[in-house]
Image (cartoon, rainbow, N blue to C red; front, side):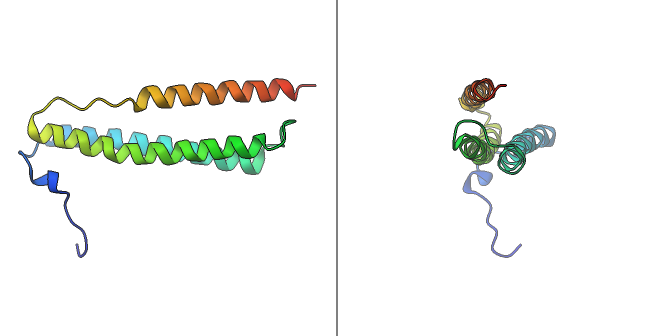
Length: 122
């Protein structure tokens, strides 16, 4: 394919068992689906929700969801590539704090939504 280059790490070590590479790709795709869900949530919040009683809260919520989606998409490739490289080199799989950070960010976001809903209660 013209203009496409293989990353340098793809020439290191040896090709891993294709089953492990395919499992790594499925994990990458799960991260991409999570990113798309966050982006869809951002659009839904911005376009479909009635404004909260706190001015700007809807826009802030949509922005945070979109930024989380962007971050997850960026982390997805790095994680896939790091895992693929480790498998090629027979090295330990890399650790990522992304799971804990994503979980904490979503928990904080959910707590914020609960507060906004309670503030706007009838």
